Image (tube, rainbow, N blue to C red):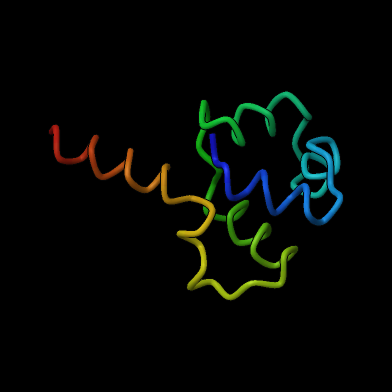
Length: 77
């Protein structure tokens, strides 16, 4: 689960459905992404940073788990 993303979403009073609508996906897809079952696309990550008014350099705050998993997968090759 992407805990920092969940925390930030809740602080801003947004539901998973709100986020799904903003990203143009169905709520179950957003749920799966937020819970780490499916990766966010780079475009979705940037859209979330824009929504939260954060610079691109802060991307690791929310998506560190996904980045870590990707590195581990690449190291296993």
